[in-house]
Image (cartoon, rainbow, N blue to C red):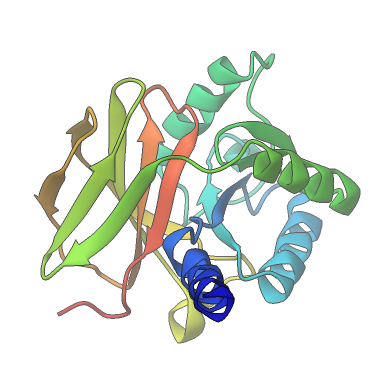
Length: 219
């Protein structure tokens, strides 16, 4: 009998990590090619990306520094809207670059490795949510509980040979798939233009509940 209990305990231990696999910490960098401190932030996040498999990084290009140089070709209106949402969320005086945001719960300057490390630790300490995301054919399925209205974001980004910039996963397009209030739901996915990720986030640019990169080059 003791052997049976030991076997069951070992089986549970082996199964648990898969069942409790956490969503990666979403790190968002807001940057501009006219920002002097941004190259160091890109370098810092490249190192994080190379060293950690439990972190997913997106770079959002903004255009409010264009008057200092040439127009940033990667800038998106959605980038500035998103950052201003975080300005309100964190009660900052205004947007800045290179700002990094961690799962929507921490923020700091991304050109300071020590601050990035501390912010990652705080985001991890905040714990995981009870939301799961999975693919079902051409649809994304969500299950779990949401405390309030939640947004589901479909984001295109560049990676690998597609990414000719110095940024980690620069965003090229973002689309809201719709609000979610918890429970089970399935939504159709738009066509992925390059590389794509699903982000489930409390409305008003609140805490990120789940992040799931999609398979490459969806047909």
